[in-house]
Length: 96
Image (cartoon, rainbow, N blue to C red; front, side, top):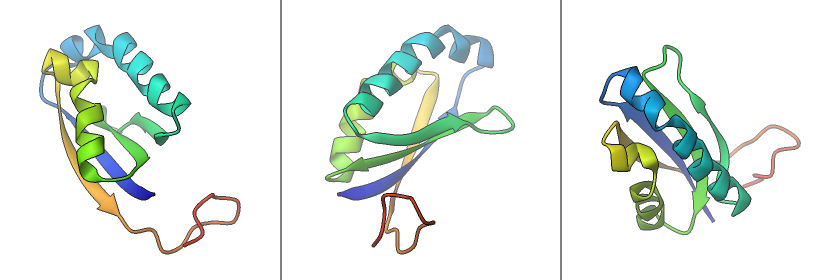
């Protein structure tokens, strides 16, 4: 399994982002339930968000994001950064 940091950048006013927020949360939950997403949340200041994901490759992550209501509504753009984790705190599932 490979790890990815997804940087979500809002490209429309927050009013438009908020209109898609409930559907976006349903999207997030489906990927948590599938074991794809490990953490997520809004950035401060609220100009986007961050998702920590695990997947077999970057293309898989890209396909998921095409189904995100934020993407479909045109309110966000994404940067996908592959992350080679070499250390983690005790209790975290990553032990590479």
